[in-house]
Picture 1 (spheres, rainbow, N blue to C red):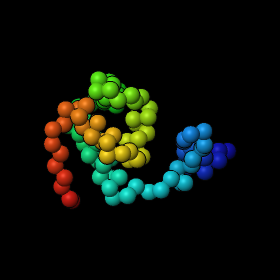
Picture 2: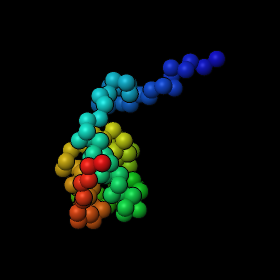
Picture 3: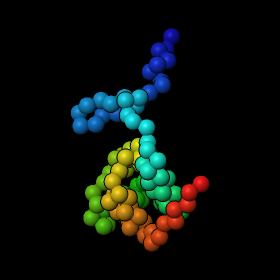
Picture 4: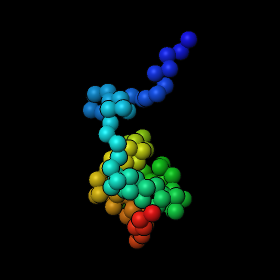
Length: 99
């Protein structure tokens, strides 16, 4: 018999400390917006995480695919990082629409 609570959350290692998903705060409106913008631009440019890592490297930003996926999934990244990603993808404008 399996222990179902094992499947309801996941563990992530941050700075040698295990953080449970339930311990992480919910996304704010702004974090959710930043996450949505980054993912939408990746889709608009037909860019995979791996390709974005390569493009970031070309502009001098060292990132690996796993960290990029985690940052994007969490929506926890700086405005500077968002701008770096947009620059790397060749995005020249972003339209903010409140739905």
